[in-house]
Length: 371
Image (cartoon, rainbow, N blue to C red; front, top):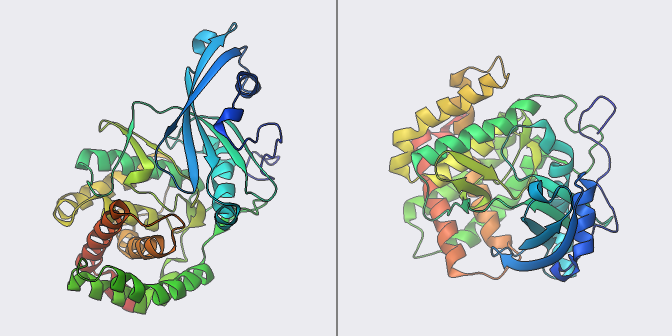
């Protein structure tokens, strides 16, 4: 942290904390992690098991046998997150590794968004190795993009999202001293528009026969006007998740949600997060029935957390403008993912394309960009 308490500075690079295999999470190693969090603890045994199916990183649940004065209040299980894949794959996603470590160590404490407690975090200088030790959110369960979610879950999720955006809303010095934090301004969005324009035809071709003609046409039209997006959204910024979707949210029923996977963290237009979540998480009919109430819930939470001078109608306008986030991440995610293509991933991308294209048409996003 900087002297005035704002996030900043270098990422933690404690060499003795960085491991590359769950077998290295020995009782002595976990004891060190927990003692750094001021627990008078002795870990006497550790057992690990893989969880999730991540390709760019790997997650493990580690079970602990504990002794010591603070054993009763220490966690019995933790989640260990490590990089995965080849050295080349790690180099490609190094910026994402920095972003995730940076969020937990520099920004999480400044926001009330529900995230797992971070017990330990470190990353190597080249960002190809990192270690993240998080609280275990079990029995919370991850959402599934292809299944969508209930309106009550969406309400919880958008209120949680507002808790990320509100503390950093419009801060002029948000990125000062944080050289690893991406800022996607008009120039950055212009570059992504060029990539999207070059990638849309291959995406449509890949899913020919499974992608309805109406959605293929919407994707092409998005690609044609995406170079205008940056100048429409450059006037407002906050810290944004960048990939706030169901697969990155852990739900405890409908009343609580925990946001994970912070590798796409950036300074950007808040409406992108809101639009991306609602347009992909809810099928068109359900979204139409509930989106006004959900945007009102998000806006109300922003207001409760101190955001002023932002009328509800501006929030809805930003939501409409943010809709290009859906096609952008869907197309680029499908074509440039480093992991092997699977049928389940194809179903996810097709669901995201269908839902986000319907929202773009119904909300007149392309017409806004043409203005």
